[in-house]
Length: 85
Image (tube, rainbow, N blue to C red; front, side, top):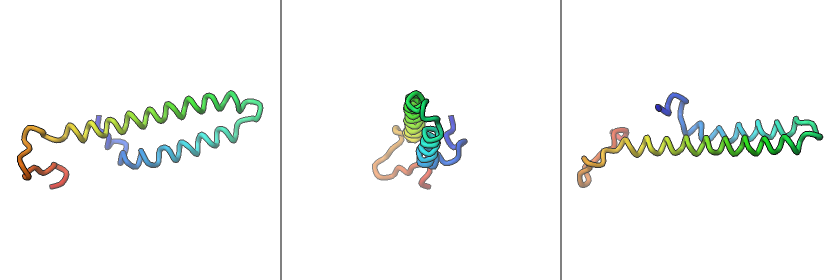
């Protein structure tokens, strides 16, 4: 999976929680007072699912970076990572 198809993944990891926080706050604010207790439970589940999504995205970013290094061809002080050249 190429993570760059979403744009810059770091931007997604930065702006995603901010936008999601505003959306969830708006959902809690716009809900009728009689249903707020019930809706808050669903919002907690959605927030937890969103945090797991961000965890999986950052894990995929790490694994993509980690697998891009050729560990067998590293020489003493002469290895250059492909993106640094």
